[in-house]
Each structure stands twice: as C-alpha cells, then as structure tokens.
Amino acid sequence: QVQLVESGGGLVQAGGSLRLSCAASGRTFSHYVMGWFRQAPGKEREFVAAISWSGGSINYADSVKGRFTISRDNAKNTVYLQMNSLKPEDTAVYYCAADRGVVVSTTPAGYDYWGQGTQVTVSS
Image (cartoon, rainbow, N blue to C red):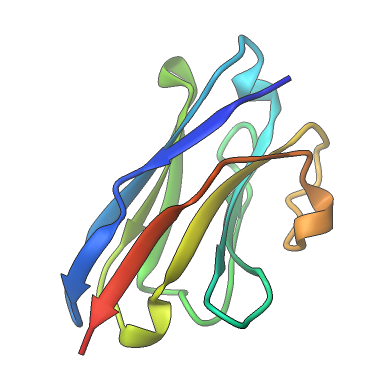
C-alpha cells in the first residue's frame, strides 16, 4: 500500500511558475513508476507526465512539453512537477499517481494508487 500526498498548488498569473511535490509513504517508493495527471471542471482526467523508477524513462503530454519537468528523489520518497510558463488552460486539480509495474503509462488505468489532488489556478 502506498499513500500519496500532493502539495505546492496555488494561484499564479499566466507566465508564472509552480512546483508541485508528491510525498509517498512506504519503503518501496523507488520501485514505482510515478505519474502526474490533471482534471479540469467538466473534463476527464488527463495525463501530464510520468517517470520510471530510475528516472531513465520520462513521458510528457504534448501540451506541457518544454514547460513542465518531472523529477524524483527516491531517498526522499518524493516526486516533483516543475511547471513553468503556466497558461490559464493549465488550471486544474493535479493528481499524483503510483504504479507497481515497469511501464511508464500515460493512462489513468495504468496506475494503482492516487493522491487527493492539489488545485492549480492560472489567471490571465
């Protein structure tokens, strides 16, 4: 069992930056693929970024490539999402997810555990 707690969300103006963190419980954090997803009101949950247990494989959604960076610190049981050049369309609840497999999945169904989410609001 893994418990995930996101932090770092907030209100920012367009063009600004935020850094999300996801702290995971459990001694086997380094064995999990970690992902970030987001869900805007009235929309389905969508993939943002994911990283393999070693950090050697990373996927990004096309909409965030070049602006967002995912990273992890296995010693701290934490995964990060650095978000730069934020746009109003990035406004959503951002969720951290963990997967016990080895595939860096881009779909919500590929993840076993989820955090409660953190709100990110980008004003124009």
